[in-house]
Length: 222
Image 1 (cartoon, one colour):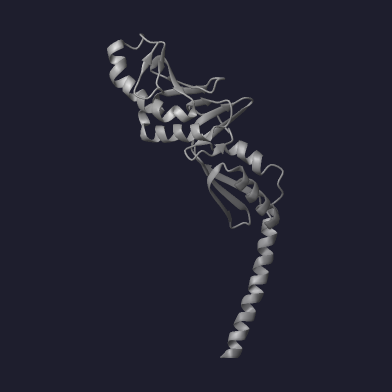
Image 2 (cartoon, one colour):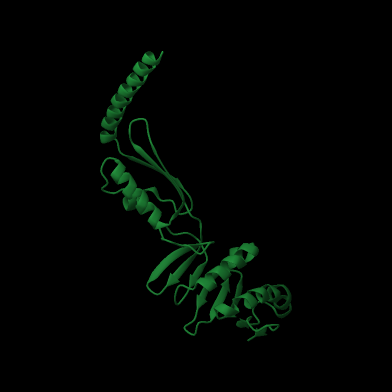
C-alpha cells in the first residue's frame, strides 16, 4: 500500500513538473488583459500608465506592476489572476472622486476619505479652488455634502481667496456666500441652509450680492 502511494506521489510530481513547464511556455507567449470599472476608469490611459512596454507576464513584472498600481492609490479594489493560456488579467475598480481640487499649478480629484486621486478623465464634479492642500477644509466639505446631498448637487464651486477666506457658489443662486476661513466652515455651512430656507424667500434671490455666513448666530447680507 505504501509502495503504491509512493508511486502515485512520484507520478503526481512528474505530472506537476510537466504541467508547470507547459504553463511556462504558454506564459511566455501570453500578454496582459485589463478589466475595470469606476468613475475614473479609462482602459487606454491606464494600460499606457501601468502596462506600456511591459514584457510578457512574469512573476517579476507582475510584482513590479502590482506595486506601481498600489502606489498610485487610485483604486479601491485590485485583483490579479492567470488565464488558461498563461496570460495575466488585471481587474481594477477606481475610487469614486467627490470633487476636483484645483491648487496653484496642480489639479487632483479627492474622494470622501480625503484621498488625492490623479485626474485620469474629466468628470462633472464640484470644484474646490484652494491656496494649498487644506485637509481640514476638505474633510469639512466632504462631511457636509454627505449629510446634505442637496447641497452637493447644487454646489458649483468653492474657492479660497488670497486672505484664506472661502467663498461658496451654487448653481441655482446668484449670491456669493462668504464662508470664512477653514476653522469657521462648520458654522458657515450650518447657516447656509438657514439663509436659503428662511431669509432668501423673504428678500428674493437677487437682493443680495454677498451673504456672510461665518458669524455665529448672524447672517449678514450685502
